[in-house]
Length: 231
Image 1 (cartoon, rainbow, N blue to C red):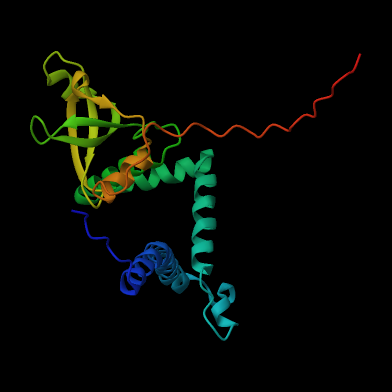
Image 2 (tube, rainbow, N blue to C red):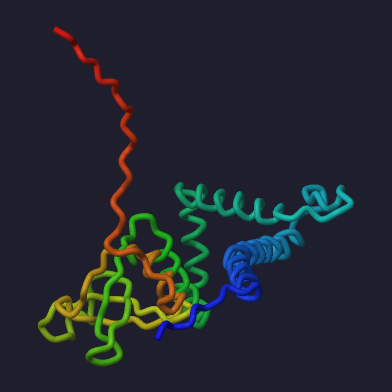
């Protein structure tokens, strides 16, 4: 018997159009909303501390969004510039020496400073590669981000095998997860980038990079006219 042919009804077409529109519009709207919320959040923190003479909201009949963010970027750049010279390093060193005398504050400050230095330092090679490990048990595999070779006391106390420090992200929030020390021989390196692996984790496997990767497109060669020479 022939199987019944599914009819492409008007309702099915409308549903398909709606889902296509949702896929196109939803990421744009969410990205715009989060960006706008971040700008307003920074403005709310910075603008109250600006003198009236330097605040455009004093002269304009409306609030100028993004001005606080611009001031914050300029201020952070200036702090970085001042810290790079001797006077700036002296001031920073004096401030850190004051924080070292505060029992609870110094622990919080040093922890946050180490995190930001690790994540934002240009010379740092953390999370440059994605890999697979068997977790949480044999036969089940999880995506991890390679951090660095295990160092310090942890490396000294672990048995003879060479281990690597890896970060195991959680779904759908890859910024939270677990630090694991895994033997090098138990890690399978992946060809996908860290960004592609992060997308796969966030989407719970719904978004997966193409494999094998598509070959790069070669520039189109100009067609040369063939000239025939008659003898």
